[in-house]
Image (tube, rainbow, N blue to C red; front, side, top):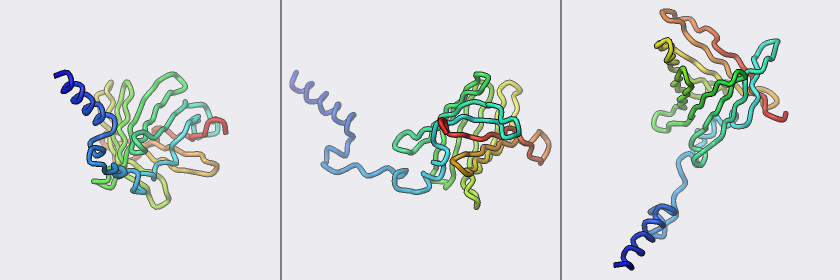
Length: 179
């Protein structure tokens, strides 16, 4: 009986480490996010960033880390504001819909948006901002634009309740750390 348990746990361990395709001798095929170029469309945002307000003051807004995970299938964002607030997002291309999606969470709100590259090369995602404190839901749009010298502009807009007019919510410049 000891031989059976040893063999069974050895097999289970090898499955967990290498995956079931190794049992048949076949190579694991590459993940779809490694073969479709759409998964690289938001890579201009990957990096370690100092973020400043996009106005004449260039006041520090915070820092942000955007890193690829799961073989480049997901971009994970970790934000820290100049005031110490934090938030995180998961960003991914959904090949079933042909759209990029972002789900952002912070202590007081959540943002869910989707979209893609526009004709100028900006990533434009639209959806909703859910404010947990005010118990409100507002239309939300985020635009990330790569500009000269590796800088990225992040421009957020919301629609006030009952209006069709977009109003600025945040306008920031992402500057690569150490540049």
